Amino acid sequence: MKINAIIFGATGMVGEGVLHVALEYPETESVLVVGRRTCGVRHPRLRELVTPDFTDFAPVQNQLREYNACFFCAGTTSVGKTEEEYRRITHDLTLGAAEALVQVNSGITFCYVSGAGTDSTERGRLMWARVKGKTENDLSKLPFKAVYNFRPGFIKPIPGLKNAFAVSRVLGKAYPIWKTLMPNYVCTLEDLGRAMIHAVERGYTSTVLENRDIALLAR
Image (cartoon, rainbow, N blue to C red; front, side, top):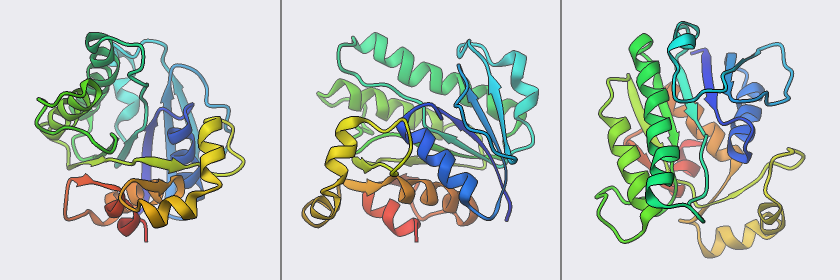
């Protein structure tokens, strides 16, 4: 199966890593990066679509048709934001992009990077977890071929990529320890990228993938 993927969020640590994995994967035929600014990567199988307005995808919808995968890696921290602000960035922009995509390409497999501890009930005390839970739930209602919600905890970055957080680089050096002590809360960025690709190729038994599921599907 050839992978033709759309990636949102390639200017962040997770999106950059998923893009790197996708371009290295032998079955990847093409990648379209959608973002507000260029990701700065050049590759013969990569095309970019720069669209400054993430609230209106109507002008670019027709360019989203010929793909079988979407890896949605865009996101932001909830620190310093009200629930309304965080919901607008995390839920509303994600659903806006997904709804624009499903209108022209319902045969796609949509992979959303959520987070460990996400609250599927949408009623918990943690604001970010409620918002992430609503985002997952609403994505799962859309008529895509499939929707998979990935819930990584700490992510070990890929060495050499430019957008890794400084703290992630430092903590990543002790990854074997974290993996031994907290296997349910850590994964590598390579494993996350491979697991998303494999979800498109072969599916998975659950639509919500925790860190152990990510490691298993990445094999």
